[in-house]
Image (cartoon, rainbow, N blue to C red; front, side, top):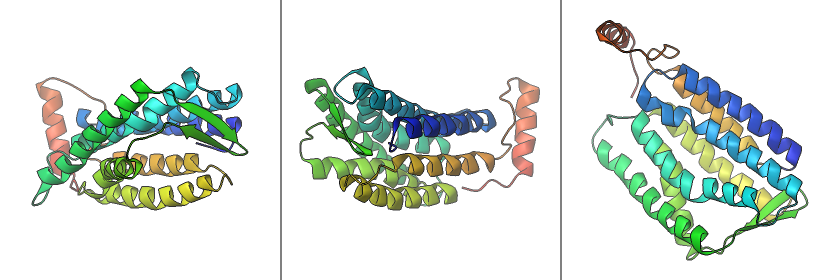
Length: 233
């Protein structure tokens, strides 16, 4: 979320462009879900730009925004992290990935059921947009959401993804405080920083930038590249 339609559109376009670069640079198929996360975040911002122009309400843009923000992200993020860091490194690696995945699945199911049974409305307040969903047990849902998204990054075992989790967690607190005071919405800035960190993660993967290939020769070349590189966990 940004503070105006123009800001949302500019931020969404820029974040989406970073996402396109991430996808192009991804070498392994299992890195693609996490590499594509900025594309999803960029689409989210552009959707809200449409919502700004429509003056809020409960139209299609509001529903699309809510679907991405609520059930999609808490399920998508831990799945993408698990795929990008598989096989898990260190003791208890599988459990580290399983906990956020379980939290994301439960949280997404609760939020999806809520969206299916109620009408989401958006209301513009100065330089912020407020969304009314009426969540059951909001504290528990928020805890599950954070465990699924921020927790998945912090528990990933990957240095850059742990940094991304720390930045996202701290940034979410600041953005939420600014948003709750109806001062200004700065979530788009957090999404932009997160996208750049994902670009760094993709760039340091073994063989980043190589095209996907198939066939015995291509597999041998990929294996040789992997042996020359020193992949981090």
